[in-house]
Image (cartoon, rainbow over all chains, first blue to last red; front, side, top):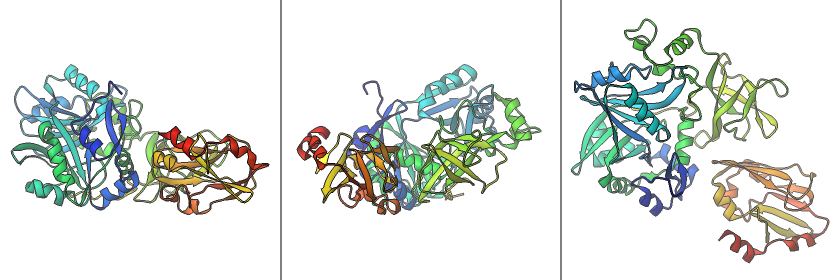
Length: 373
Length: 119
């Protein structure tokens, strides 16, 4: 693991007894002594603290010094209405390619005089190169800040003890706050389906900040294992599994992220890579779509499992992109790319070790979200 | 108690051999959420995949440690797969096998040898 990177919290993870695994070029905690199942349930019952410092934090500045100009420029790479994003607000977006596929998904925040962007760890080098090559903006990777997520119903109470101002934030608000002389960049968002926050904190104070939260009885450290089961219960996409260059945002059931302004007849229709295909699929409907699946038995159906219409024979309808066990729903769950016209409740069959087991097409998310709107 | 390199334990019970997975294996697997057991009466050869354990992380095969016949399986694991994490060496046995001769067990590791393997 000599060439793997570590986040500023690595020593803390080790001290907390984490099992460390390589992930996206980093040595990351996959679980702590509590274990994936209990970490997952704790996050939904109280509050979980996640180190997501491996993700890319990027600031985009326009020569004018106005966020709206950076937003208009970035719209050339994403099918999302960013010019309409108010100051202090954040929005989900995806970089598309000319074929309409997805290069990465990201969060974009309007911070008044610039945009703050968070991208996936595995894609950050390519994303930054992509923005530098295609945007007449100052693209600055932030490399001296950790990123922590605090998620769950007790997240607000816990974080508000350190930063009282966060209690007034709504889902997808962003703001700058002071914590004992350090500047925190906080958004009310996350990747679990729970209410919660993501906090960018200067490296020098990251361990102290994490320890201040972990000292609270409702906060436990949570690893990548539970992060994955939490996001899957919430029906959220994991780049490289549920979305990639071969899936369009429409196929990925992400059309909700494409606002009116960028659609046909909108104020800034198209104008992003792959617009012809993506707007075409929006109008005509895609042939296949990311759908939820609930296996009927207890056996999980994992990524790569082929889905069939019948208990035997026939060609596969599609394949599972993410699958596992949902601790909160106490059942196996999966998402798969399947014919878009399959109705909810339809029974299909997943080939698990040579046996076709039944599963029902189910609405996403599997676990209701609890965002503070 | 005898141990295999696949992290199974074998315990003689009368003329039968009880098979389970070791605490070390259970810990490495993480929280177990599903166990698929063979049908009693199945005749198996050493190395056959006879059972599947699914944890929150991945699926793993349980191999038949010896030639023989599966005569009983632990139905509790179907309802409560978490037993594998709670009591891997006791209540979470997987199946009982009838062997032609228990002598074959002499070829497996004892506890000291297994401990040396996992350390």
